[in-house]
Image 1: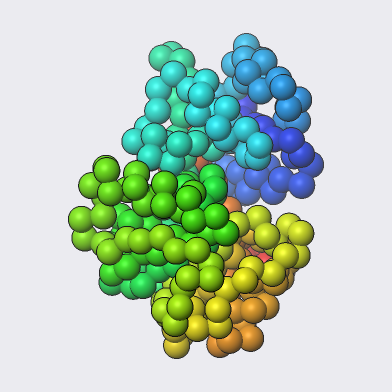
Image 2: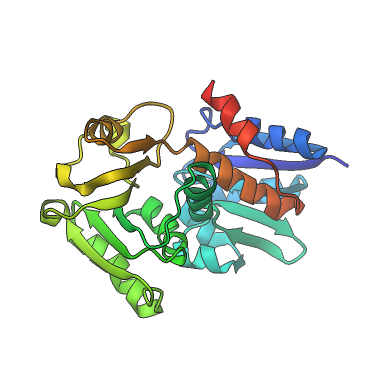
Length: 273
Protein backbone atom coordinates (compact mmCIF):
# COMPACT_ATOMS: atom_id res chain seq x y z
CA UNK A 1 0.00 0.00 0.00
CA UNK A 2 1.30 3.44 -0.95
CA UNK A 3 2.07 5.64 2.07
CA UNK A 4 2.33 9.41 1.65
CA UNK A 5 4.79 11.78 3.35
CA UNK A 6 5.98 15.34 2.78
CA UNK A 7 8.49 17.98 3.75
CA UNK A 8 6.98 21.35 4.69
CA UNK A 9 8.90 24.61 4.42
CA UNK A 10 9.08 28.08 2.90
CA UNK A 11 11.10 28.14 0.70
CA UNK A 12 11.09 24.43 -0.14
CA UNK A 13 12.06 23.98 -3.82
CA UNK A 14 15.72 23.38 -2.85
CA UNK A 15 14.96 20.49 -0.47
CA UNK A 16 16.79 17.23 -1.08
CA UNK A 17 14.45 15.31 1.23
CA UNK A 18 12.33 13.73 -1.54
CA UNK A 19 15.41 12.23 -3.23
CA UNK A 20 16.76 11.00 0.11
CA UNK A 21 13.54 9.32 1.24
CA UNK A 22 12.91 7.83 -2.20
CA UNK A 23 16.41 6.32 -2.14
CA UNK A 24 15.74 4.88 1.33
CA UNK A 25 12.40 3.45 0.13
CA UNK A 26 14.01 1.77 -2.87
CA UNK A 27 16.72 0.25 -0.69
CA UNK A 28 14.20 -1.07 1.86
CA UNK A 29 11.57 -2.09 -0.74
CA UNK A 30 8.87 0.19 0.65
CA UNK A 31 6.19 1.89 -1.45
CA UNK A 32 6.07 5.58 -0.50
CA UNK A 33 5.29 8.94 -2.04
CA UNK A 34 7.27 11.88 -0.64
CA UNK A 35 6.60 15.42 -1.83
CA UNK A 36 7.66 19.00 -1.16
CA UNK A 37 4.92 21.22 0.28
CA UNK A 38 5.27 25.00 0.24
CA UNK A 39 3.32 26.35 3.20
CA UNK A 40 2.26 29.99 3.46
CA UNK A 41 4.16 31.67 6.28
CA UNK A 42 0.88 32.22 8.13
CA UNK A 43 -0.69 28.92 7.14
CA UNK A 44 1.32 26.10 8.72
CA UNK A 45 -1.56 24.75 10.82
CA UNK A 46 -3.84 24.57 7.78
CA UNK A 47 -1.10 22.89 5.73
CA UNK A 48 -0.65 20.14 8.32
CA UNK A 49 -4.41 19.67 8.64
CA UNK A 50 -4.71 19.30 4.85
CA UNK A 51 -2.01 16.63 4.83
CA UNK A 52 -3.81 14.67 7.55
CA UNK A 53 -7.13 14.94 5.72
CA UNK A 54 -5.47 13.66 2.55
CA UNK A 55 -4.15 10.53 4.24
CA UNK A 56 -0.52 11.48 4.78
CA UNK A 57 1.22 9.47 7.50
CA UNK A 58 3.83 12.04 8.49
CA UNK A 59 5.92 15.02 7.48
CA UNK A 60 9.33 16.55 7.91
CA UNK A 61 9.44 20.22 8.85
CA UNK A 62 12.13 22.68 7.87
CA UNK A 63 12.63 26.44 8.22
CA UNK A 64 10.82 28.49 9.29
CA UNK A 65 8.25 26.15 10.85
CA UNK A 66 10.06 24.02 13.45
CA UNK A 67 8.76 26.08 16.38
CA UNK A 68 5.22 25.99 14.99
CA UNK A 69 5.49 22.22 14.59
CA UNK A 70 6.52 22.05 18.25
CA UNK A 71 3.45 24.10 19.16
CA UNK A 72 0.88 22.03 17.26
CA UNK A 73 2.18 18.58 18.24
CA UNK A 74 -0.20 16.88 20.66
CA UNK A 75 2.53 14.55 21.91
CA UNK A 76 6.26 15.35 22.12
CA UNK A 77 9.19 12.97 22.39
CA UNK A 78 11.83 13.70 25.01
CA UNK A 79 14.34 14.90 22.42
CA UNK A 80 11.76 17.23 20.84
CA UNK A 81 11.02 18.63 24.28
CA UNK A 82 14.74 19.12 24.94
CA UNK A 83 15.28 20.83 21.58
CA UNK A 84 12.23 23.05 21.88
CA UNK A 85 11.56 22.42 18.20
CA UNK A 86 10.14 19.69 15.95
CA UNK A 87 11.40 18.57 12.55
CA UNK A 88 9.44 15.30 12.23
CA UNK A 89 5.69 14.80 12.55
CA UNK A 90 3.98 11.43 12.86
CA UNK A 91 0.24 11.29 12.16
CA UNK A 92 -1.45 8.38 13.94
CA UNK A 93 -4.61 7.45 15.80
CA UNK A 94 -3.48 9.49 18.81
CA UNK A 95 -3.09 12.68 16.77
CA UNK A 96 0.18 14.44 15.96
CA UNK A 97 3.45 13.23 17.49
CA UNK A 98 6.40 15.63 17.26
CA UNK A 99 10.03 14.51 17.29
CA UNK A 100 13.40 16.09 16.53
CA UNK A 101 16.02 14.10 14.64
CA UNK A 102 18.50 16.93 13.96
CA UNK A 103 20.77 16.25 16.93
CA UNK A 104 20.99 12.51 16.43
CA UNK A 105 21.69 13.20 12.76
CA UNK A 106 24.66 15.39 13.65
CA UNK A 107 26.05 12.94 16.19
CA UNK A 108 25.72 9.96 13.84
CA UNK A 109 27.45 11.82 11.03
CA UNK A 110 30.38 12.79 13.25
CA UNK A 111 30.72 9.45 15.02
CA UNK A 112 29.74 6.88 12.37
CA UNK A 113 30.60 8.57 9.07
CA UNK A 114 33.56 10.72 10.12
CA UNK A 115 34.71 8.20 12.76
CA UNK A 116 35.28 10.80 15.48
CA UNK A 117 34.07 9.98 18.99
CA UNK A 118 32.73 12.94 20.97
CA UNK A 119 33.38 11.24 24.32
CA UNK A 120 36.08 13.05 26.26
CA UNK A 121 36.49 15.74 23.60
CA UNK A 122 36.57 19.52 24.00
CA UNK A 123 33.60 20.78 21.98
CA UNK A 124 32.82 24.34 20.87
CA UNK A 125 29.24 24.99 19.72
CA UNK A 126 28.97 28.24 17.76
CA UNK A 127 25.54 29.85 17.90
CA UNK A 128 22.65 29.89 20.35
CA UNK A 129 19.61 29.81 18.08
CA UNK A 130 17.28 26.99 17.13
CA UNK A 131 19.90 24.98 15.23
CA UNK A 132 22.21 24.99 18.25
CA UNK A 133 19.40 24.06 20.65
CA UNK A 134 18.45 21.17 18.39
CA UNK A 135 21.87 19.52 18.69
CA UNK A 136 22.92 20.52 22.22
CA UNK A 137 21.42 17.62 24.19
CA UNK A 138 22.51 14.84 21.79
CA UNK A 139 26.07 16.21 21.97
CA UNK A 140 25.95 16.23 25.78
CA UNK A 141 24.71 12.63 25.78
CA UNK A 142 28.04 11.58 24.24
CA UNK A 143 29.82 12.88 27.37
CA UNK A 144 32.43 15.25 25.97
CA UNK A 145 34.97 16.52 28.49
CA UNK A 146 34.00 20.15 27.88
CA UNK A 147 31.25 21.98 26.02
CA UNK A 148 31.46 25.71 25.41
CA UNK A 149 28.67 27.63 23.68
CA UNK A 150 29.80 30.84 22.01
CA UNK A 151 27.58 33.46 20.44
CA UNK A 152 27.62 37.10 19.34
CA UNK A 153 25.18 37.91 22.15
CA UNK A 154 26.26 36.19 25.35
CA UNK A 155 22.80 36.28 26.94
CA UNK A 156 21.41 33.65 24.55
CA UNK A 157 24.34 31.31 25.17
CA UNK A 158 24.06 31.77 28.93
CA UNK A 159 20.34 30.99 28.73
CA UNK A 160 21.09 27.68 27.01
CA UNK A 161 23.69 26.78 29.63
CA UNK A 162 21.31 27.70 32.46
CA UNK A 163 18.69 25.35 31.03
CA UNK A 164 21.24 22.52 30.79
CA UNK A 165 22.33 23.04 34.39
CA UNK A 166 18.74 23.16 35.65
CA UNK A 167 17.96 19.88 33.88
CA UNK A 168 21.07 18.26 35.35
CA UNK A 169 22.40 17.17 31.96
CA UNK A 170 25.89 18.52 32.63
CA UNK A 171 26.75 15.99 35.33
CA UNK A 172 29.58 14.43 33.33
CA UNK A 173 30.46 17.50 31.27
CA UNK A 174 32.02 20.86 32.08
CA UNK A 175 29.75 23.44 30.40
CA UNK A 176 30.13 27.18 29.95
CA UNK A 177 29.29 30.09 27.66
CA UNK A 178 31.53 32.78 26.18
CA UNK A 179 31.16 35.66 23.78
CA UNK A 180 33.24 35.38 20.59
CA UNK A 181 35.85 37.81 21.87
CA UNK A 182 36.13 36.05 25.22
CA UNK A 183 37.34 32.64 24.03
CA UNK A 184 40.95 33.52 24.77
CA UNK A 185 43.50 30.88 23.79
CA UNK A 186 41.24 27.87 24.33
CA UNK A 187 41.59 25.07 21.77
CA UNK A 188 38.87 22.56 20.87
CA UNK A 189 38.79 19.11 19.30
CA UNK A 190 35.38 19.54 17.65
CA UNK A 191 33.96 22.89 16.55
CA UNK A 192 30.35 22.93 15.31
CA UNK A 193 29.02 25.98 13.49
CA UNK A 194 25.28 26.18 14.12
CA UNK A 195 24.91 29.78 12.91
CA UNK A 196 23.47 30.92 9.59
CA UNK A 197 26.50 33.12 8.86
CA UNK A 198 27.31 31.05 5.78
CA UNK A 199 24.06 32.14 4.10
CA UNK A 200 25.39 35.68 3.79
CA UNK A 201 29.07 34.71 3.48
CA UNK A 202 29.67 36.44 6.81
CA UNK A 203 32.94 35.82 8.62
CA UNK A 204 32.62 34.84 12.27
CA UNK A 205 35.01 36.82 14.51
CA UNK A 206 36.66 33.75 16.02
CA UNK A 207 40.27 33.46 17.21
CA UNK A 208 42.62 31.19 15.25
CA UNK A 209 43.52 29.40 18.47
CA UNK A 210 40.18 27.54 18.70
CA UNK A 211 41.45 24.73 16.45
CA UNK A 212 43.39 22.08 18.36
CA UNK A 213 45.75 19.87 16.41
CA UNK A 214 43.65 17.44 14.35
CA UNK A 215 40.42 19.33 15.13
CA UNK A 216 37.18 18.72 13.26
CA UNK A 217 35.38 21.86 12.07
CA UNK A 218 31.77 20.95 11.30
CA UNK A 219 29.58 23.33 9.29
CA UNK A 220 25.90 22.46 9.73
CA UNK A 221 25.05 24.09 6.40
CA UNK A 222 25.77 22.20 3.20
CA UNK A 223 26.08 22.81 -0.51
CA UNK A 224 29.07 25.12 -0.70
CA UNK A 225 32.26 26.16 1.04
CA UNK A 226 31.44 28.76 3.71
CA UNK A 227 33.83 31.33 5.21
CA UNK A 228 33.89 29.24 8.40
CA UNK A 229 35.03 26.18 6.45
CA UNK A 230 37.70 28.21 4.65
CA UNK A 231 38.91 29.70 7.94
CA UNK A 232 39.07 26.27 9.58
CA UNK A 233 40.90 24.65 6.67
CA UNK A 234 43.43 27.48 6.59
CA UNK A 235 44.26 26.72 10.22
CA UNK A 236 44.76 22.99 9.82
CA UNK A 237 41.36 21.61 10.81
CA UNK A 238 39.58 18.70 9.15
CA UNK A 239 36.44 20.18 7.61
CA UNK A 240 32.97 18.69 7.05
CA UNK A 241 29.68 20.18 5.93
CA UNK A 242 26.16 19.25 7.03
CA UNK A 243 25.21 16.97 4.13
CA UNK A 244 25.83 13.86 6.24
CA UNK A 245 23.73 15.32 9.03
CA UNK A 246 20.91 15.99 6.55
CA UNK A 247 20.91 12.38 5.39
CA UNK A 248 21.27 10.95 8.91
CA UNK A 249 18.40 13.01 10.35
CA UNK A 250 16.29 11.86 7.40
CA UNK A 251 17.23 8.24 8.12
CA UNK A 252 16.07 8.65 11.71
CA UNK A 253 12.74 10.10 10.54
CA UNK A 254 12.42 7.22 8.06
CA UNK A 255 12.96 4.79 10.93
CA UNK A 256 10.30 6.51 13.06
CA UNK A 257 7.77 6.16 10.25
CA UNK A 258 8.64 2.69 8.96
CA UNK A 259 10.57 0.89 11.77
CA UNK A 260 13.28 0.13 9.22
CA UNK A 261 16.74 1.73 9.43
CA UNK A 262 18.14 2.49 5.97
CA UNK A 263 21.78 2.45 4.93
CA UNK A 264 22.89 6.07 4.64
CA UNK A 265 26.36 5.71 3.11
CA UNK A 266 25.24 5.20 -0.53
CA UNK A 267 22.91 8.20 -0.34
CA UNK A 268 25.58 10.49 1.10
CA UNK A 269 28.02 9.30 -1.57
CA UNK A 270 25.50 9.95 -4.36
CA UNK A 271 25.15 13.60 -3.31
CA UNK A 272 28.92 14.06 -3.10
CA UNK A 273 29.37 13.29 -6.81
